[in-house]
Length: 100
Image (cartoon, rainbow, N blue to C red; front, side, top):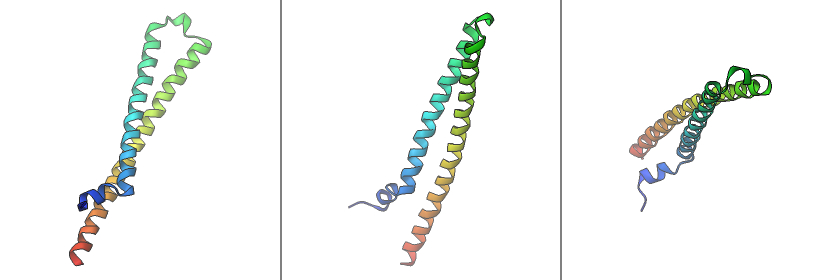
């Protein structure tokens, strides 16, 4: 027979928090990889090769890394809000159980 913890862990908000956590971790990894690629390109290519489309690609890669980092930070905020909601729901469920 499942206990209350099992029931709580399968709640949709718990699932949303877990998916958010996984997505945030994947974004953090992707952002780090983008930043590494940008750094390597900046260091490895001589200045005379960092013109035109190559310069544009390096700049876009750096901008993408910044966008990914920002999205990751926003997901961390969402994850924290979900955690607060989970705690509040659990508190209310305990309160209801004590009254019932």
